[in-house]
Image 1: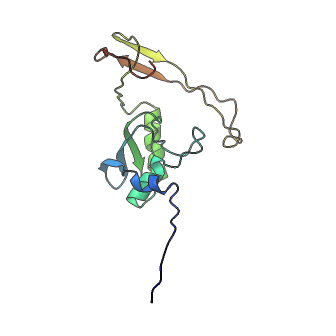
Image 2: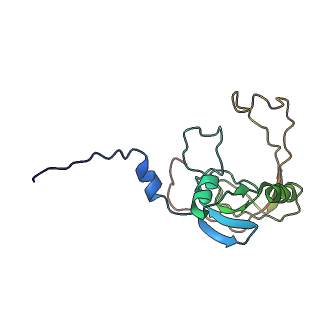
Image 3: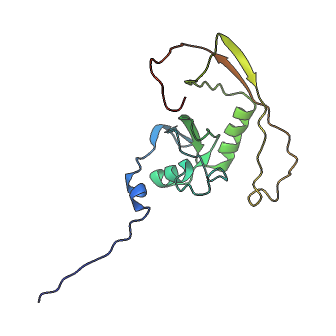
Amino acid sequence: MNSDLSACLHTEGASDFFTQPPLSVLYQDEHIVAIDKPPGLLVHRSPIDKKETRFAVQTLRDQLGKHVFPAHRLDRPTSGVLLFTFDGKTAAKLGEQMMSKRVYKEYHAIVRGFMYGCGMVDYPLKYRFDKIADKHRRQQQAPQPASTFYQVRKRFELPYAVGKY
């Protein structure tokens, strides 16, 4: 019997799924898990990018085989330690500790421009409402206080132009 067998495989979007590396787990116990969030990854679905298909919450859930709850967020371009819990109650408690500044957080950044010594940036964050996702939220939400102390660790200049800057 001579038969030719052929198959057509639809792979649109599948290559991203198979080529994405797993998230690096820094610490895990029965209550929490800490990962090294890479830059560019959203923590969860957001109106910021409705076309995005990969999120830390879903990726970690699939990687560990159980539901996870973010205790806080990191902005999309920010890399660093991101904490998750295995239940919503623990996530809420950790999140409250972070919001009330009982958790010390330190960021290291490379910035463009001229900064000297140390100082404080006090710039309240305004919430941008999404017409669909936030239709039941209070539209007159006060800006969230946001203060950042900074200290210049090192200054350097590059001998060539980088990007459009």
